[in-house]
Image (tube, rainbow, N blue to C red; front, side, top):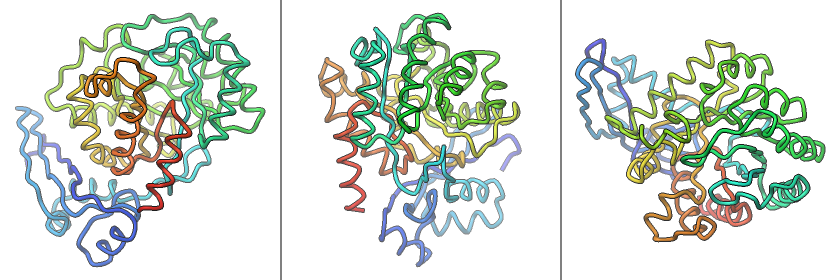
Length: 355
């Protein structure tokens, strides 16, 4: 393999529960983030850095394991796929976790204006927690396509009272923001996670701030900003490009002093992605386990679901949202970010029982 060629494995033939454990014990499969998931075959992908040429071969797990014995990059990738993920923000990742979306905004694409008043937002956050959300993600700035930036002060005024009230109730709160000042104030108010759609690239102070605060962070893939991102949705290979760009974001975060065990990644469904891109990322989500980090999937009510199902209203896309969340969980997503918490929690419980 040439020195400028990068190697990936896209897991296929996924198994869950007892089937996964049995196949692993018999040497017929390879582990995926621990022993509750496994895969029986995978696409071995090579991409030449100089020419961009991509080659793919579907190989059984046994052959992948044999090849890894004398191919160090393959051994490293398989090890990252296999390693169990540590707890994130105090939450064990031995089962799927639900993050409830709480937009304290007038213009978010689905629920803008519904929870713009602090008291209504707090009440909704408490209802989501009661219904099964283990993280409440509070955001004060819409990042829908074309959304305009809001000032630091306006964002602070929207989110801080809500974060403070929910944290006082003992809930695990994440702050959905791109701004270092908001991150700092929200953590002071009780937020335990920073969730940044720009992967800490929007604000020059963001990486240093998260490193100083020492809190877990979610790095999402996006190109450009909300008002420019859809013009940047051109990829050589969306799956490999998102993997590599997330890998770069993680490297920058760690170089800034953020502990790797404090990082979760998110492929950014809908952000600088067209419908075909979103489907490819959802279908082959398991590739991103090759980063060796916990994985968040966030596609609730998004536009591509409406495009496929001909459902125009975002808040009427429950069935489609549950379908893609189920697909993500089958691929081993550790956390899902959703609007419809009771229905998602019910589905997760059933999937766990079936698996």
